[in-house]
Picture 1 (cartoon, rainbow, N blue to C red):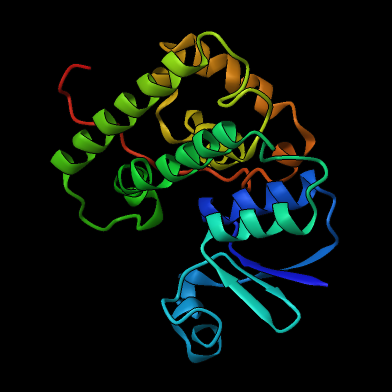
Picture 2 (picture 1 turned 135 degrees about the vertical axis):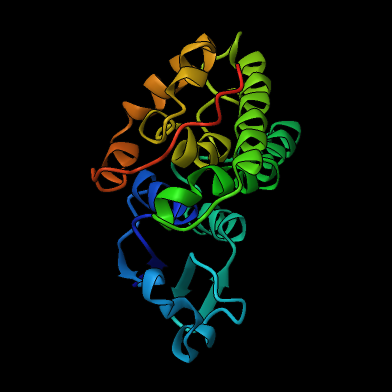
Length: 217
């Protein structure tokens, strides 16, 4: 049986959890206590020498990096299809998969830092920049979604990769960015209606996320 190493408050492993449920693949989920730095301890470093989750273990095969894991799952069990057989659509899907990490995760981490490390000092200016970067990213998605239900034709790994962040923006004080972008808001409603997305929602616990500075939006 496949084994997924993850943590409830880490957004990237949720991509894999969604895909596993979309494909109804039996698996075991192993929670790695990242708050206690278990991901930096020797047992976990033997799985991923860079100490990052998620990690997927399939027998003797160990795969790190969420995009590599998602593509492995797609090739291992291509039905239901989350990566189009059309070569152009596959390329665009991969483009959005990479954009969801390369151009969104850093801003997300800066914005959410006060909730992850309550009481620790944080850079107000960096959080303003993070807010603006997330807003600009949502502008790109809003234009893309203006004339379509999903990012690439049918529901795909592109949507799976964006779901973990976009579906929790309201909870982390960024709901106003969604409200002002109707195509993104409609997409969130559609993706939230999918059982695998609902079933993998992070724990409903209070998050103390301060607002951005008093600078006007």
